[in-house]
Length: 392
Image 1 (tube, rainbow, N blue to C red):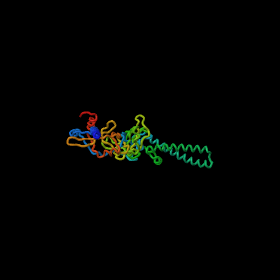
Image 2 (tube, helix red, strand yellow; image 1 turned 30 degrees about the horizontal axis):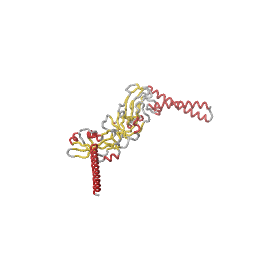
Image 3 (cartoon, rainbow, N blue to C red; image 1 turned 120 degrees about the vertical axis):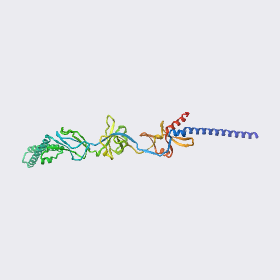
Image 4 (cartoon, one colour; image 1 turned 60 degrees about the horizontal axis):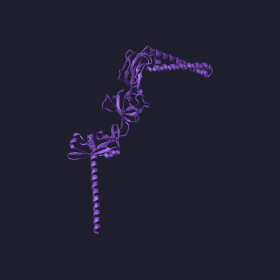
């Protein structure tokens, strides 16, 4: 009986010994896991090194930016606001009343022209006009007679044909007179004018003058160019691969070499529907909102087209990108000699405009964490030394 009791006592002690050994082993394993966790996820440096490498921290707050594409181009004036002035007949430039860059008003005299051909043109018009009066009366007379069957149809058709022919010639001649800035009615009433005034077709500025005093100007040769910069716009170039991001109504900011550091606001109004063969680029046009008076057509510009809603991003100085992950460092604790940082790994992010873009949930998890904002590459290198088992 005593023997049986002793056996049971030994059995219980043996089981207790095994349980204690297993517990001790588990504790050792847990301790090892904790040590591994500390070594892989924590970086500890002394304060002197933190000062040397200018490590700085800041409570995280989401920062936002609008995604964009970079564009280049020029300032242009639409063809509706640019006029090239010519003369329909050869003439001598007797006077030039303006200079390049001068502001002009609609109807203002820009130059005066004279030549016998000008008088000849007016004389031809007066002759055709008088012929038209005659044939118009003759046409109406014969029309009445034809309707009364008093003359043959053949005779009436011949008169009608002559009337329409003279009328067309008179209208063509009148248009040439109007191109000279003259009134056909005034010529009919007052007779020919020996000098013709070149007038501005609208309010604007003299962009260029291509004539000299007493020069002979050939018919249809460009004499002057008048522009109205009121509708000055940005002609931007977007390459084919970026076209899917662009649409009308998007905002644009651009700058010029003449005004460094100053941004101008514009908005896309039209996008061309064809791609240039050589450059594979598309032209788009943006309306400039304000301050057009200081801008000049032909200026080279560089800008950004903002292509979407605002995104949350991490400053480049706060993260290291390595093997498809972002590594951040949060200040975990400190004492008199050292500072401890915890590694935060982010796998869900995008690279947009050279910025690390994160989603709302990631930003919410980082909110108010004391993140390293300067010196992050030094901490990352120290962390990698521990990870690869290198000695400091």
